[in-house]
Length: 302
Image (tube, rainbow, N blue to C red; front, side, top):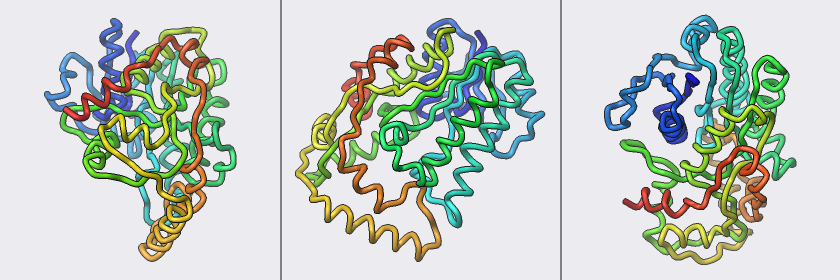
């Protein structure tokens, strides 16, 4: 297949592009800037497109001749916009993706993958957070748009770790933080390597039986155990202290006239809970195995 990868110069998109090429597919990178030589994507086609500023016709032309589409770009909660977070995330994660997949349908793309979040399937009460609301709306609207005309697979990953040349990620931040003794909340999260996620993306593109929504992940780890995997030591931070810090953060954002995609105070109980799930159904459906989280962390630690 010829597969277009949106965000192919980012962490997930880069690994997905490499995995697709290794499995014999042709890859077209769609990004604002041409991939630097360090990424080793010279054998890929390239289309210079700004997803948020391009016209539907420009997107359709960039996707012409492609059988598959991987949408590995999007606005995540690390972005704290000025003004309304609801408006920002709806534009970035709903309207832009509707435009993209409408263009894909016109270009004749038959299989598509988009990555969203594991928050709402595990914690439905988060539906009113601006970021989470945008992910829910994007899933619902895209499934309705694509219907039977384009086989759409929605992947809902947890925290994803891995390295990419010349770029930093959440894993790099944890690597630096783990050099010092830390206090972390109770609870924990599922986590997976970016290599495992890339294999899940390949399975979603290749398997005609894959359709709909899948939680994808690998290991369930407490926050202390996760820090330990990065070589660090951590004690337990009482939840009431975390809640107080989050409340101060919300006040600071208000004074700066910014709004978070995840409500800081409400997020406290989520962080301090066990965001665990069984990745088995997704692994079986998409044909990936996981088990390489330590390898991804080793890549980050150099």
